[in-house]
Length: 71
Image (cartoon, rainbow, N blue to C red; front, top):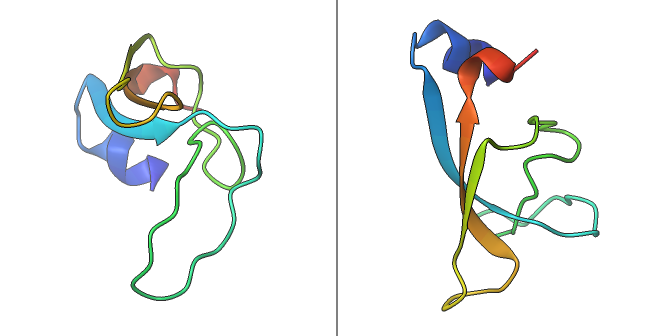
């Protein structure tokens, strides 16, 4: 996935994530799971900007990553 992001030639990536202490886990087909993109197996770096979605979930945020920060 990170290779595709880097190959896109974009400067930034905007995405929603959930900051949680719980590990990311599998989900049944068609289901929904909250992902902390900084944890395994995704391992994104810390975002350069984060906007909390307080009305939806105190743990959920809209984050911006600099593509050049990806390993």
